Amino acid sequence: MNYNLTNILPHNPPMILIDNILDMDLEGHNLTSEFKIYPEKVFYEKGKGVNSLAGIEFMAQTIACYSYFKKGCKEPKPGLLLGTRLFNNKVEYFEEGKTYQVKVHEVFTDNEIVVFDCLIYDNGNEIASASINAYESGNIEELLNGK
Image 1 (cartoon, rainbow, N blue to C red):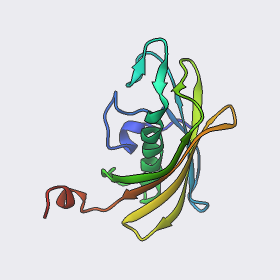
Image 2 (image 1 turned 135 degrees about the horizontal axis):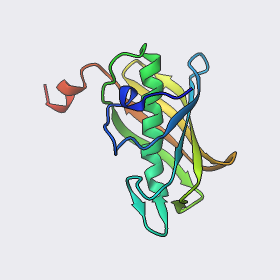
Image 3 (image 1 turned 90 degrees about the horizontal axis):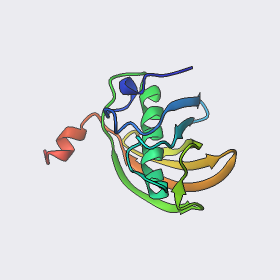
Image 4 (image 1 turned 180 degrees about the vertical axis):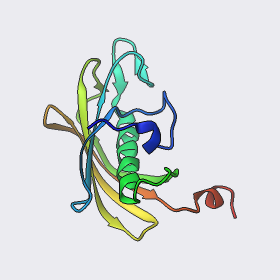
């Protein structure tokens, strides 16, 4: 099934980096997305691809998709990436022409702070992983404005 990611993510193109949602299991607290590397992709470097450090943003956007569905498909709200632990990557660049999969798994939430284990795969082989902490609340604007 193809989803309109502009309705799901609180971004506008070209900042929508993932290309599709592949699988969703809200009961199991998982969502899998995919992204393809091509020259028009934001952060693309000619002759190299996209630096693997952008993997954190691919993970964050996949988390945002999970949050959208978990919250009943309401208008997407921005969240804050509080930090990441244990970011490991086995590649320096995501290569042009390749399609990668991102799997996120919610491991903890108190309905504002959420922790996810995230993995990026290349043809079923794990090439990047991280634990990401995020803040999700309907009051994010108040937090950002210091109220």
